[in-house]
Amino acid sequence: MNTQHAIEIVAGNRFEFGKNWARFLKVLNQDRINEAERSLGEMLGMPSLEGRSFLDVGSGSGIFSLAARRLGARVHSFDFDPQSVACTGYLRNHYFPGDAHWSVEAGSVLDRKYLATLGVHDVVYSWGVLHHTGDMWTALENVASLVAPDGLLWIAIYNDQGAVSRRWKWLKKTYNKSPRGVRLLLALASAVHSAWRPAVKDLLRLRPFATIRNYGKSRGMSFWHDTVDWIGGYPFEVAKPEQIFDFYRVRGFHLKRMKTTNSLGCNEFVFNRSAG
Image (cartoon, rainbow, N blue to C red; front, side, top):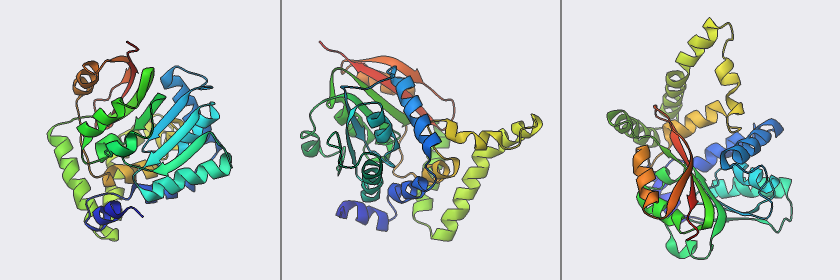
């Protein structure tokens, strides 16, 4: 049992990401897995990961660890949340039972002693995780040491929207300190907030709710579970794209690919670590 995690949950200082991922696994299907696999290979520019090592930092549901293993990688997954570890372990045992090339365990990206046991990897993946650690810049520093020379680092970090981000941080903190009924209302309000504009556009195009129906075609995820993850996702930190770029540039990383947003979502970065 992760005592620190349990204390933070009881105090309302951390969202139960793993509980939300466990619910997501109930709607996981082959189409979502295929989409996760496709998006992974596309963003990395690698249709195959055969012969490469893949480190999933904050594995969550485990869907991208599964996608990497299906692409041929040797996978190591870890997460701070015990239920996330259980979710990832479930996928490994269900799809790759007894597999010696996929390991799953509990660990923290803020624990340098633990990270020192992991060595370096060809691909280090941490999508939407490091800004939830409570110490984002230390987490960003720590994952850099896990990337092998000429290896790839793929991270996604919430975009800094100034005052808007600060308001959302307050809402997220409020969510985690509220009773279940209030949490549900906040999640529903968040869903309406994010979906009403696309819903109106879909209606005008005579394609009612097409955006929500097709949501799973983006990384294989789920609209509702991502909404709950968004409103509940605390701790919560943000960064501007140039901050992330500069942070890794001085550490010998070169930007290979980037996807930015002008909204509250995540900016995505794929960096290559210099071999020199």
